[in-house]
Length: 231
Ligand code: NDP
Image 1 (cartoon, rainbow, N blue to C red):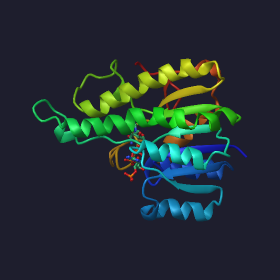
Image 2 (cartoon, rainbow, N blue to C red):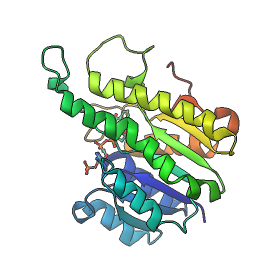
Image 3 (cartoon, protein in one colour):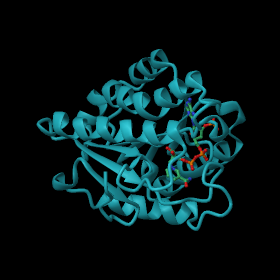
Image 4 (tube, rainbow, N blue to C red):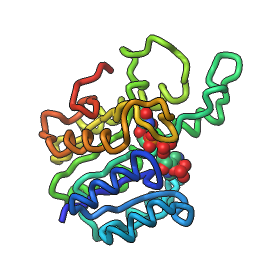
């Protein structure tokens, strides 16, 4: 049985990753920061016993190390760094930038996925597929930025992309691949109700890209349909 670890799974795209991987027969290590309040996830884990729920606040790097230690016997085929935060749009504009909040957004969106990869390297190295996935955003693309704004979110995803690109090179010699994936504009709390893509459609596409991974894809910035995106 293949194993996937996913972060940020109590709602949105992360919850759908759990549903689809469990349905496909995978073992799912489902990480969320408030399991006691994750009723949808709890319901899913009752339906699919292959889902185990693990408490993880990604801003606390000590917790990341502790979880990696607690799961030391697991081989992880695919690590999906999904959790993310947008930051406060209203305080993202010149004259009213909240630097404390920006630091938090950078920590969750850019630093934590690197820390997760570092902490879980031994588990990934033992896995069959040896793949790290970063769920990023087209908003992290400088080539695509024609509307400005969202400084915190854009810069954090651009930093994530740069870090993951380096990891794809650094880990390539160990046979570990890295995919940098944009899920589309998705109907979730973050994406809002006008988004054209359902979580089910986005995750089905992302899973197809992940399943079809070959080493030459490592370090590439792709969308959920497998199309190459501009940095
Ligand atoms: P949601 O806002 O619906 O879900 C975000 C998830 O991240 C929640 O489970 C949330 O948990 C978790 N999370 C946030 N902060 C932390 C933290 N400090 N520790 C642990 N978990 C945390 O977003 P989506 O499902 O839409 O987004 C998933 C990913 O896709 C994100 O990385 C996002 O940037 C990216 N993305 C989304 C797009 C969209 O249109 N929806 C477009 C492009 C990219 P909690 O409930 O506890 O806050």
